[in-house]
Length: 338
Image (tube, rainbow, N blue to C red; front, side, top):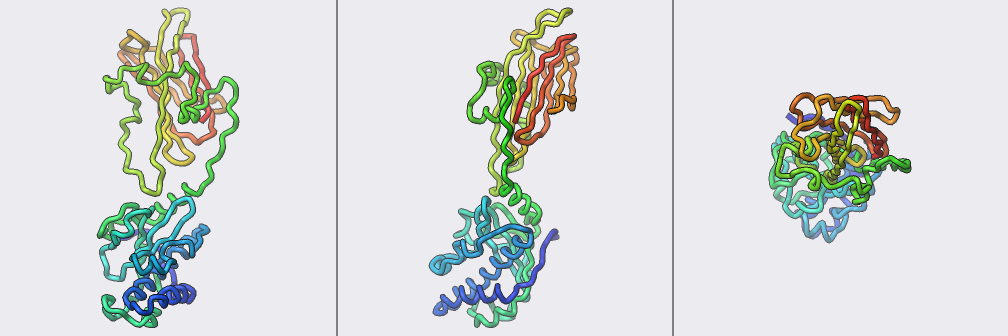
């Protein structure tokens, strides 16, 4: 079952644009028919995205080029910051979306546009262009980010997902405030800028021990849509020595990991590992995360035979947070900005 479809009327402007584009190929009726139908699909997607508030240049596309129209079965529409989407026609009663191999590259996605009514004649034979003016409606059925020769219409992704990708790509990234003295700038780690006390995880931990991997490093992630930038990740760690009055000096390793899931949101993982020559964490060791107002928002405490404590959360670029590591009466605190 196809969900979240969107129906709209094809007005005289769409048919006039299709007629003008098709008549260039008057000596090749099948090409002219293909161009007419493809142009209707492009106009339908253009109108749909315009209704959603997006500004798109209808003429800035490969499918507006008469030379490319003659060479390729192309129906693309360029979306700023996203790329070209292909607007492919289907008809009432069709169960498959067909995508020509010639448009399998340089596309950010493929939309199925159901045109109706379908002309009674066989579309394998050239029709008078005037008969195509009977096509009055278009329904956006869904989209797929990955091309294939044939895709079942029931397997298409909903339109809301496409709009979400466009919204994410076109939303300006909020620039963070300048980092205060003494605050660790985590986003600088992506440019290999960091204080010398923060070392690579490979230097601190035995990478042959898979149990020491960051919790979210092994997270199962769906293949990224071609509409989305691939996630980036970075992690670093440091030694911390705690010396509370009733405890011997205790060394632990703090590891901070960041994954950029979207243009503005990040996933953060904070881990505490035993220090050198130690198998377990002290049983009363505690880790807290505080927000920018210094209010505790997350907390975890070690128990017997714990060799790892971890907290994970999401935040936006520019946000600040702190971590506190407690052992007895001693508290180690460090502030971070994304």
